[in-house]
Length: 163
Length: 185
Image 1 (cartoon, each protein chain N blue to C red):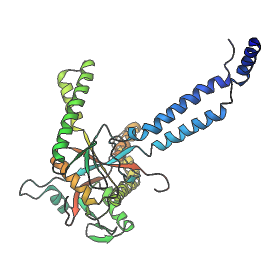
Image 2: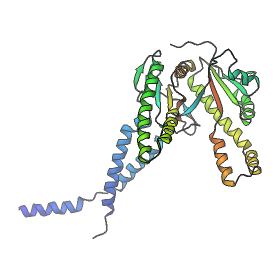
Image 3: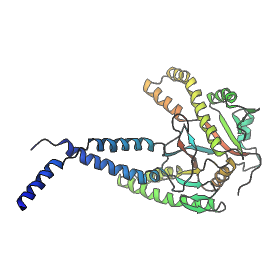
Image 4: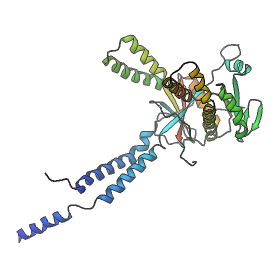
């Protein structure tokens, strides 16, 4: 058994790094966003980064509104949000129930946990920074009609030294 | 003849099989690190928004009642960049800061509105600034807060936990809508 050559170690390291880099470049931005609709989000210093699987509503610069990636009219927005919440509640509820059942929790505790998780579902409003406040408020107002209990305005972290 | 060719090939294989990969690995790893570091600026995060409730009865809404009691402060963002804080109209951020700090130190609530024409980017900037002003206000009252907890018999560990919660809370900002007329498309 001889000592491993330096080149033998570097070849796979370089290869793997290159592969990770290519994957990150191609899909990185989509992984970090909750919707693939392109908007210029405003930037902020103070942010709350824990955004647990939110339902996203996007308003682009042309005032087109999307729930996830589906375009919707403002009239049907509350209905679509309601539907998205119902689907999410079902999905998350089933997942959590299964997990807690496996851990052997009693049904009443499971019901309580599922209810709490459903109540904490978040609606994330992704609005283009070049819109006016009235444009964004019209959407926030609509979310009041739907069952969205927790709402957040999406921002990107400000880079140091401005911008 | 064939044998000679094979030997030459073996020789070439042995001499050129190990290219210098140090610089290649260095560049790729540096690129990967830079890319991963810059990813944090692409991660979406956000401000939680507390929306004001509408009055459902003929009774005065909670906001109005509490405003009357001095528990809340109304902050309007004007399209020209100035602020209306309580009774003081059209003031700058520098002028508004001490008023807001005093208010945040008392743990009171801000009722937030902005003119319809104000840019969304500017409104977010103001919310961001309010979080920072609140943080600074919290920093100023932190020693007093610690002292009070100590007097109440909290252990050092419990105090640290309470201080963490104290900062985590953030300012109480209720988004109440648009100042003045506006219309939705």
